[in-house]
Image (cartoon, rainbow, N blue to C red):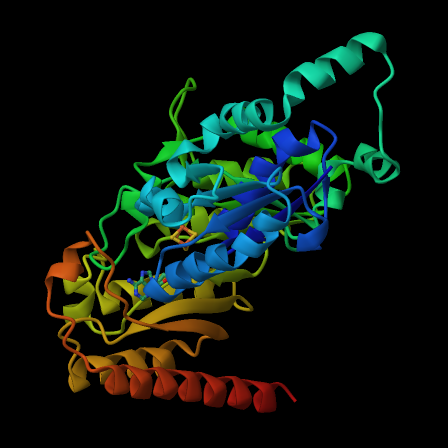
Length: 392
Ligand code: 5AD
Ligand code: SF4
């Protein structure tokens, strides 16, 4: 039996897909890259921008053919768009077998067990074959004795272990749908995280990517003394089998001295930080409810560069937020010039239902958004070119 994973969106989603594949891998299912070979399709959706959600929606529509070809097949729709859609997506596409929202990831193994039982009487069959001690295996299933990570090619780099350290988000950036679809912050206990890292890095992964929506706000208070993200970085670095530690995505407000010091003093922490700025205008940042100003952001950059001179810094930028005027946009371009980012992701503002900014007028025409996006990308290219020339 085979499963095929389709995952959209951020690395957190990729990590979630990997976690959701465990109950399947544990039953001897193997991952396939080919949709038409699959008995189960698990689609992990994203809703951060309208386009991402739309893509998932139309691709579910396209799966109808796959499903119609063999009604025994199982289609699972999970993730952030699934949180937003709820059961309405099943009304639209009745051939979906299970909708599993991002907030329900802990309940996923039970939910999937239920579907397998209903559809294939899977539980009874496997139990019986275990009892007889002669589990039937198809030839390709033998390869499932490899650790699931190796059979799960959709999960990014084979050398990097993705490790979720927190879920959800307590912030309320006015453009962002994530708090709605992923819920409040939940932190995993540090010993559990360290154990997962030990296991994964002795099984072949060398690098670790710590994941969380505001990853550096991490803390674990269930110990004699409270532990924070700086402690975690140190503990992870101290694991011998770990070669490199990265994290995604930090919030500028938590990029404090302790965290910067932990990065500085551990050679294993990558000399790269992805620090979303979103805008270079304090007025827009305020309307975005980012809880920092342009100046605050620049101080964090200065502190990072002073502590770690060769650090690479990348960012996310949103253009065309409601009310972003030409002067605001110039401030964003000037931030790019001031920081000289080593790379960036830029997005056109997309109003998301239920967010605070969705009630503001989406007043920047789409051609202006497009023009601003192109300007940001062109400036970034020019900055990187200059950097490249300076290095040679
Ligand atoms: N519109 C455009 N971009 C968005 N992002 C988050 N929400 C929106 C939105 N409504 C961007 C931010 C974030 C990245 C993951 O997606 O830049 O850092
Ligand atoms: Fe998309 Fe955000 Fe969900 Fe990641 S957390 S999949 S970016 S909506």
